[in-house]
Amino acid sequence: MSEWDASSRVDLSHLTVQRDGDEYTIGDPRIPRFIRVPEPAVYVIERADGTRTVLEVQELILRERELDVDVLDFVTQLQKLGLAAAAVPASETRTKSVNDRLVRRIGALFFTGSAAWVYVAALAAVILLFALRPELLPHYRDMFVLPYVGANALLVSVLACLLIFLHECAHLLAARGLGVPAHMRVSIRYIVIVAETEMTGLWGQPPAKRYFPYLAGMAWDTLLIAAALLVQLAVEPGSFAHDIARLVVLLLMLGILSQFMVFLRTDLYFVLGNATHSADLARSGRLFLRKLWRKDGDTIEAWRRLPVTERRAAAWFGAVYAIGIGAMTVSLLLYSLPGAYTAIQMAVRQVSETPSHSVPFWDGAIILFLAGARLLLYLKGARTAFRVRRERKLRA
Image (tube, rainbow, N blue to C red; front, side, top):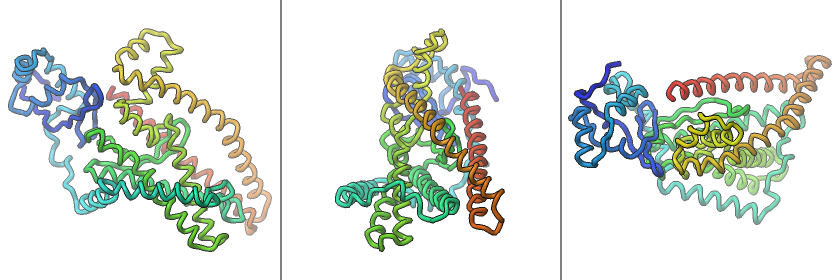
């Protein structure tokens, strides 16, 4: 890595700059990597167009703004983060293929501009149908479509995975519609396996344009709920299609409710972070909680370094975070783990005590297969989460 000095010509024209509250988000959407900076840093970026040296940029800011900015130190820090290196080699900048352009057009069609009104209309239709026909509201019994527990669990798992995939596709298409790179991955939050769409490049967009990609999954879920309700009205009650439609509504409603568990960095967490202009709402919330019970100097100093707007948002989010984690832990210990243990115990008994050609044997085998698949997903998610956290620490 070449060293910068006062005579080096610096070009930061590839960085995007977006105002977020009292600070600015700058970064390179091609990586993608973004950081928060104060306003004087923006003065440097605006003037570092490749035609001026570090010293010339510093003198120009001093003359125009009467601010003595350490441009060399700022550029050096950007270089360490990979934001002020030489131009990205041609081999690393992907030529947009026909498929890339097609995906962007589809994303722009379904998740930009006036398309929002389609999802608003779907939400209004869902609310109206539930109000006029309360029997359409989902019930826990809708989870049981088939007579055998194992087969039913397999059906629910496959359908839930399909709906989650479509939810994440909506995020991906919405981001691609804005020209932002995005990809799906499996990770864990707390101890929950999640599918998520990585779209860090949204930080390079104005705050107002980030909302639709963040809400795209819930918007698509609402559209599917409206469609499933119409299917229920169109087919014979008690038919397989009717029961599947009710199961779809139940799974999607549970998915939307789970988005309110913001302490798990759900879609609504990112909406709140964008609205409060918080760079890392969860981290700031944890720092607020740590400050309450650990009075060490490092924690207090880290809290004081946060902007006022960040501290204000962190204070209430810290309370939500603590309550949410506590409630989930109680639910896990009292219900989820005992229930899972009982189900696996019953499945093992069915497999070991009944003939391989019997229905109970295969019913239990399906439960064990699903438990194994979930464990593998958890291990893959844990690996992804560990890698992401390690990368964050290296950049810090």
